[in-house]
Image 1 (cartoon, protein in one colour):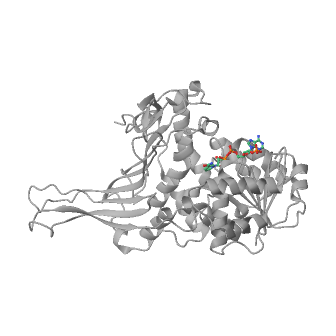
Image 2: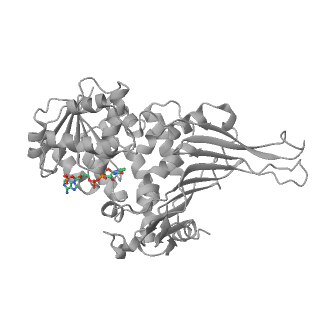
Image 3: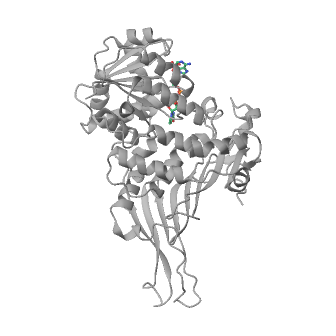
Length: 455
Ligand code: NDP
């Protein structure tokens, strides 16, 4: 079992806004490894007590509330060391002190320094049970993802590499698995005979919110579609695994990814949309045009809206469009997977048009609902559309908590395997290249609108 969590980039947004709250929830649930110690590393000239004060302040600034007891518990486990260069193995060794502890290294760092940090870790004589958690984006394209995989495997075995996608720790995402593989009812209609299309949507009202240093070199396609939304597609499109053993689960996801059609230039023009917001208003707040946001390089043409329609070329899904869409500064927050069934084959209710059933798996708040047509409420043969809903309270342990726990316990099932991350890039790479060449026009949409024309 892991006894030490080492966080690189511990002064950053991810560590303070997501990792520590998640760790506190694990403490509350008494799920953390016994005697877990946490070593936080960053370039800030702080000592442990400065860092603890920094974490406390950040925790108090969050919406969610934590008990004093749990915060104190966290503080008692937490040490801080300053390191100037995460690529310097001697500095890391000095900060770590003993190399005998089975540790897990969390790279909460800008992706540009993942490789140098991994190289430095590779130069240390680490305990054989050491593990590493690598944040997204994993690589900038297929080539760089491959080389990052090669580099990681020089130091860690695949079982000890945890490529994280926090969506896989979300309860609605995990509910998709139960929904699909523990209910006889839906499997017989889970195919192109009954399903017309699938929309996987992550629309945000939030604009850039000061994150230009990260977002401007990424954009919606790499930030959302290459990882999170393709993962959701895998869970909808995969065949039932033999078990939830990590190998079976990943094999099935990789099979779907391999079956996704590589688009030709003509298909990319037809099936993808890229756009960015112009000035407007969202959430009653005036938003400047993306190109005028602080820290943005307007020449880069980074998109804040991406839509890609993919086809899974196999017997189950042949011909069914899967549309993946994500945008910022839109008129409404909409986080959902919508499975649109085909209309009934024949209208027994005379001229009344019967709406098709739609299954919606929604996030924030988490809910799974299916629309059904019933006729008991009013006139005997007048149809009405109802929603059957299962709503879920906010999960007590957040996504990062569940995934940290899995990594502590050595279970990579809900992480991304090496061939999986490469398969995802293989789908996105040609789109990225075509967009870079300007083959698909960069549209604009006013902030606060429903987005660009996607016809
Ligand atoms: P930050 O940009 O806040 O960077 C994290 C920390 O890395 C900084 O606090 C900084 O600490 C350190 N750092 C920056 N540049 C260097 C450098 N050249 N050498 C050494 N250390 C450096 O990133 P986030 O915390 O937002 O994200 C961390 C990772 O998590 C990224 O890979 C990101 O893509 C991923 N992620 C982030 C999410 C978020 O919402 N924040 C969500 C999902 C994934 P210091 O200068 O003090 O050393």
